Length: 217
Image 1 (cartoon, helix red, strand yellow):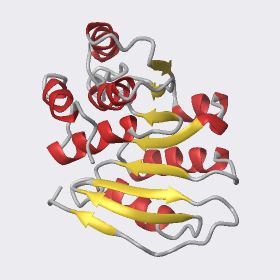
Image 2: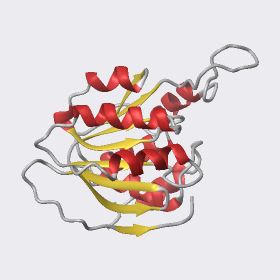
Image 3: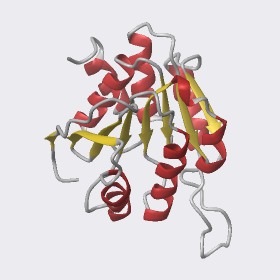
């Protein structure tokens, strides 16, 4: 069941730059609304998904946070030999959006590379992880593996990975080669291009159940 303000929040999210199918946006809002702990997000851009999960947390009246990590940078421009920014104002846009919607106290921004920021996070408070940063195989795999190394063995954690499909073969390869083959993870559902699974706490029995709400990515 969707949180009570899911429709209004998804309509607001449409005004924030980013790429989410309506079903994905509604699911992310619900991740926040039904969260039982903090949410870690890798890849912020202008904060569309950040807003949805944080708004869900706030609407549910819960004391948790979205911890979002992004370097707001994507390599060297071969023509200028200077850093290529994902969007010139993406870091400013995130802060502006959080202030506009009153979510500054719900969201914690970390500016930096995933492999530098993730080890600083207390994973005992994390309930869900949303990976939507680098989409090439090397970057996506590194993001998954650095998170995987820090996940506590005694907790069940929800893992979401965006853009799983032929449009982004690097993400698809990471999921197929590293996530689906990891026996500690149980696939739960596909929401269009959103791959959802769970890290199962040690001692809990795995049941190979899965379902899907799929649209070609």
